[in-house]
Image (cartoon, helix red, strand yellow):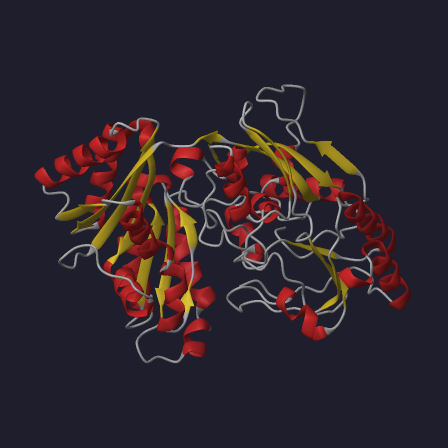
Length: 480
């Protein structure tokens, strides 16, 4: 994990803090340590910091005034959405001189246009709220994450979030038509255009998507909506090897075509964790299998299209002895049960002790070999280590997590995080993969970038950052 960074910003004195508080109002300027606590620690407790103040602006204009003042004073600003990020990008360092800027009060759905299949929202709109708003007008906003009840659109875009529907709809980047962004000097860029075609120069919005708040603060977005599927079909298959999962994916892609919405994979150890620690969970299949695939198809044909397709996919795979056993959800409730087995995986690993995480991607065809080599390497380094590789097979994104040996000392295991990361990332690099598929860089992977980015890439990134934030006030010490 990245080491602590000493920031170059100026610590805000009482007079400056009073000016910040005056912009948002005392009610929304949080200074008491106990009230700030929830803003200062990330979800897994890996990163905890200290802030001078937490500001909760209620409008884009207030964000603008905060940044203008911070830029003049040289005060560091840490943007924060729902605080669900997993690489520490939303957490201040320990110097106590940074200001957290929470976007949670910017939570309006500004406009929905079903005819144009667009929705304009504030950055602080919770993902679940955005999905519900789309559903009310018979549309789908397809971004789907386990944290959707608390993560916010601004954070999703700032980290270019992925999730289970990337196979069909793409990452967050592909779901945006326009942005509203406050720049480091307080200027507001109004790029809230809902055009599908606009070839008038640089595509500025893509600078800010995935930038983790280091180039500007997203305050609004025009999101793409889609026709709501009239029918879905969800299957859960047991397989003998991860190689067979690849063969099943080939069949699903060939038969399902554009109807194939999600294709997730889970090892048996992950299912055991969920059965052991989850509430009201049952094994969908009568016998245990080494690997599982969760396959979902959707479409507009309410006459049975997706159901017929998934039967054809699983039928062919069973006949070819690629799949050993399978179940097709007979109801929405049963489909939800299948998905809970997958979605609880991250949560339940904490009950098994320490867990060293990797969010990586490799070419789809390389997934079986990568998992085999990584598991052999990790278990060779730490006797009894328990690899738990799972994730989004259809887009090559593997959450290659490693649970501590049973009965081992948690702190001693976690102390080997960097060592294990280096070994796994070396294998990822051999496959020309990525050390961050969907979680971002933040603090955790900042020091790893020079090992996977060329000097040309790093120079370009630094030049863009210096141009947009010459005083280095926006999330300093993060990304690059």
